[in-house]
Length: 196
Image: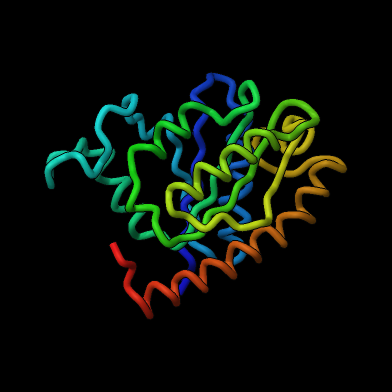
């Protein structure tokens, strides 16, 4: 059975560079035999958080929220692609994620950060690690940090230059660790139902 992996991306900016990394990850995971799907917060278009999915009576949540809840429940693992805005994660990604809670539980998550500069979004990735842990995900230790993103991936998400070569070398370990935790979590969920 192929691992079902959702790759979340949260920038709402008109000239989004991080979509290159999201596309790279989807293609790379697919090439390894996973079933990866991009979840673009801007395309999903959830409103600013008012009520979480679980706060709607059954069958009354907005259609986009209901569809995404079903995808999250059906996924084996998640990858979060986070840019760095003023030392923190993108508000669009945080807003989308906060609409859900129990749907995330007992699954691994991996973080890929990026920025236009040399810090590669690592400060955002560090913040994001705590957020995902609090939301019931097991955050894998391998991360990707890409920067400057414009010198690492071209407009179609293909690696370029020495920075792109470095990304390709790092991706294998990142994907291997996510696959290990995905298999372990799936086996545990099958063996023992979560307590809630």
